[in-house]
Image 1: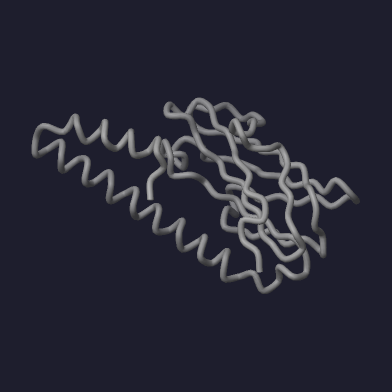
Image 2 (image 1 turned 120 degrees about the horizontal axis):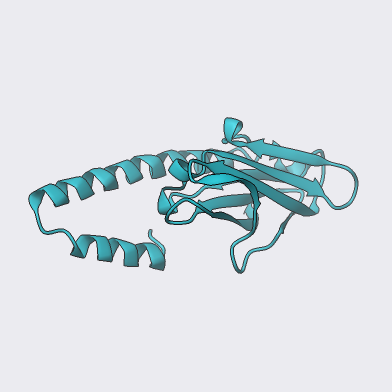
Length: 168
C-alpha cells in the first residue's frame, strides 16, 4: 500500500500519460518497483520469521526505502548502533545489507549513527526524518529497524527508526 505522498505522486504521474508509449514506459517503471518491493518483502518476511534468537537480546535490521528510487541514489551506507550502557557497538553496511544484527542479551536505548553516499550524495552523516529519533529502543525479544530514504534528486538522504518493529 502506498503512503499518501506516494499516492499523490502516482496520481500526478498518471495524469501526465497521454500516449501508448508513455503508458508502456510507466508500466515498465511500475514493474521494476514491484520487483524491488517483492525483494524487500521477502527480506522483511525473513526478518520476522527469524526471531528465534531474539529472546537472547535485541536485534536490528536496516531497510532501504523504495521511495524516490533510494537504492539508485544511496549506494553506500553504514548504520551504527551504540549501546548507551556498556561498550557494545554494532554495524550494518550496504555491503551486507540483509544482515540482522543480534546483540548479546542487550535491551534498552541505543544511539544510531547513519552515514550515506551515492552518485549525487557526497559521503556524510545524515539526520533523522522529522518526527523520528536519533536513537532506537528495543526489548530483549524484539527487532528494531532503521530505514533510509533519499530525496527526490538523490542529493540528500534521511533515516527513520522503528523501535521494536517486530517482537516475539
